Image (cartoon, rainbow, N blue to C red; front, side, top):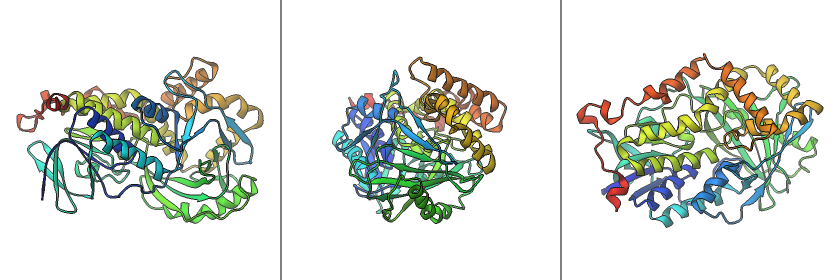
Amino acid sequence: MKAGHFDALVVGSGPAGSVAATVLARGGARVALVDKAKFPRDKACGDLVGPRGVQVLTDLGIAIPGAMAVGDMVVVGPTSRRVRLPCFPGRTYPGHALALPRAAFDAALHEAATGAGAEAFVDRAAGPLWGDGGLEGFSLSTGTDIRADIIIGADGASSRVAAAADLVDPGRVLWGFAVRAYVDERVDLPHIVLWERTPWRAFPGYGWLFPGPDGRANLGLGLGTLSSRAGAATAARELPAFVRTLCDLGLLRGAAPAPTLGGWLKLGMVGTNPARGRVLLTGDAAGLVNPLQGEGISQAMSSGRAAAQAALADPARAARRYRAYLANTNAPYHSATAPAHRALLPRPRVVSAVGRVLTAPALGSLLAPGWSIFWNDLLDGAQPTVPRVVAAIAAGIGRTATARGRMREWFTATLGPGSDREANSALPPHERVTNAPIADRAS
């Protein structure tokens, strides 16, 4: 069955896809928004939207009913010492996050996209459709064919779009896996727990306990698996022991958690080319998850908006525009922290030592403000304060330490000035994208 031709096909209607579809539809584009699930649907997540994500919602005028404002965060170290990380307002983002279950949050964003005019398809992107310009769309599992001038992959870490467009180098990707459960207890502040199953053997990730607006808390474990997708069962297997630790710490009274839900993450951008030709990857599909603390919703929404804006401005050069955006906004942080993630994860004793230092009584309190800015990737746009200076020093150390590494070479080759080989001037005539700007066609 033929569905005709769209200006843009967005595969996946999570935060990245829904925001992309909203911006495209508001810009006059005819948008097909494909997701395998009917909304509302649930996702494994900590349910926190960081300050940059809150700003995207404000910029787009999207209200999220029932969301709860969340400020400071508490980090619990390996020796149970606690450090409070303050949440500062920046020049380009507010001084708070939002807490809301993903089932409700994603449904609100999906409604915003369809309300703006995106046409929703509850279906799976099955077989790729090819043409003279490469990947042109997908045949859905029900038999409907959708072709488009621009294809935005917002379909998660195991992106079907990324695989079809051959944009992933599996040997380089940094994988993570997380399990999440809800518990019927009220929690006042978000907690990150640098957990050790046994002394001086850091868990290869961290645990969390986050508040929710409905009186339930969100708890879970996330772990890194480097380039392997084995070991995901470790998080689910260790979750009961982690819950007991939360009770021992006095953070939970002992209520039994609801059944868990798990999901894969792709961390630090490395190993995934975010755009080529008419295909742009956003959110988890592009690996836009903080490799130090696992945040991904803010990056998903920001990248969805940026991809849509690049497509509206000029589909023929959308990939170049979008890569330039990522090179300027996300790559400076990820190119330093992804190598740190890879180096530290196999060294649990070193990670334990770092956790002890950062949560030491005097030093932890001194470093906490700058740590909060750096760890949460809030340096760009931060107020010119002493904590910002501390965060800038940490970022500079990270860049210096990773300047000559193989990951930095990958970032430069993929996102640097020499990565624009598919720009129209460099493509063979039969491969060039000759579409007029979407905004021009829609007017």
